[in-house]
Image (cartoon, rainbow, N blue to C red; front, side, top):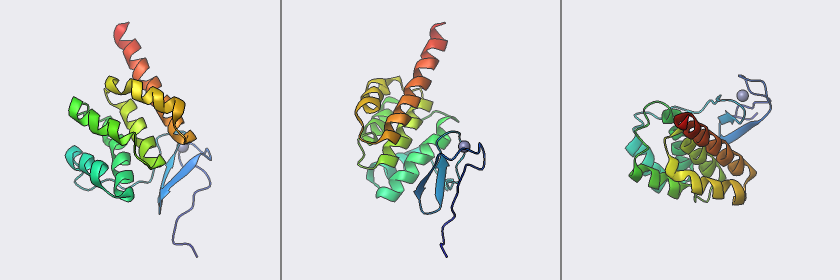
Length: 148
Ligand SMILES: [Zn+2]
């Protein structure tokens, strides 16, 4: 008996493109579904600190949390915070780089465009390249909306 829950397909969109983050944590590459725990008392400063100094597990959870809070208040898109996020795009872990790339797409983080483009082109992980491309599209479509 496995203590872990297994998903064959996404409970939300039905696509099979699910990815296990670790343990019982899953997320869907095709829609916004995930069963990831909400960070208790997760304020942006704590999350950024974990992202910077945590072990792999904490960094993954922190990077994932950025996505969930990214849309809400956008307090993270200051120059200082963006710098932490840009550094995290060099994380050794594929999942951390993926989540941070996706989170940057949701933030008003135009500063990150050139780094994301580099990642979309050169990253060793197809998942990370995909996440970076999605983020670039989101940022560029917002720029288009502003200039029109
Ligand atoms: Zn889905």
